[in-house]
Amino acid sequence: MGECDRRTMMLGASAMLSMATQAQGSASAATIPGTQSDALIDLWPDGPPGAPKPLPSELVQERSTDPAAPDRALLHIARPRLALFRAPHPNGAAMLVMPGGGYNYVVIDKEGYEIGPWLAARGVSAFILFYRLPQEGWAAGPDVALSDAQRAMRLIRHRAEELSLDANRVGAMGFSAGGHVCADLATRFGARTYAPVDAADGLSARPKVAAPIYPVISMHRPEAHEGSRRNLIGETASPAMERRHSPHENVMPESPPCFLVHAEDDPAVPIANSLLLRDAWRAKGLPVESHFFTEGGHGFGLRRAAGKPAAIWPELFYHWAAAQGLFARA
Image: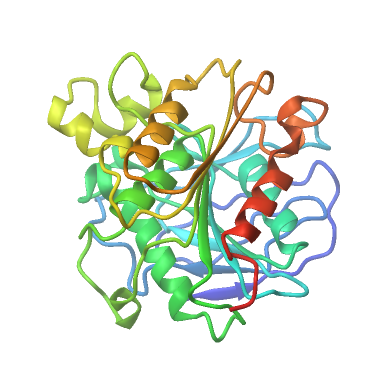
């Protein structure tokens, strides 16, 4: 299992480090001016299962025209991994964070490397998940991102003592398509999507809490986000396939407490997705907290919510999660 510390000096605002690697290559950190992860942790000790041939060739794409505000995406993920942001004063809690990208890529900055330091500053160790993409030939197909999320939860718990964490206080948060991964994990954490590879796989993948933020949920039209649906299950998926990959139709009595955020003016993922998930949680009698804002659009993360009603969502989440016992010492 590779883990490479990458504490680097602050680079110029226009700096960008490509993360193009092969699955067995050495870990390389994506550098953000003034903000680096503390370590990269490979999920799979012998490489991810069910790999296509040839392997995807990883690529970083910069989408921002503002050098002071990077907005990078990681494409063709061949080596799923966690970027760890250690809490300077840990309270024992951890969050698995799954950025979005429509199952076409995984964003690095706005829903990952911006969230990580925010959580770490509050005593919560953050693990940003760069998960594999379902349309790139992996044997697990539509379950490949869930496989990585399950493995990530189990690996965090397996290494909890080493990382000064409480294995019982590991939550999950996801954004947009990453919100779909988060909700999928919360509803199908026990599904067998890969063969166990080591002792970590004997542990539970159930998060203590789940926070899908402006999530993709339904694979049924018209609520479905078309890009995510196409990349996950294809244009001509059967109704059974749509149901299997629509988390609101797979909620279990054991699913964890849920925290939802969505903007009414979201132009990409209809707010109906969060409403469907909220109603499904309530139908099972499970705890759910929902915050729907008049303005925020889509993909606002932290920085892009500034000055909008949605800007308060991180503090609302923090206080809710504390009430659920995520941040309190056991």
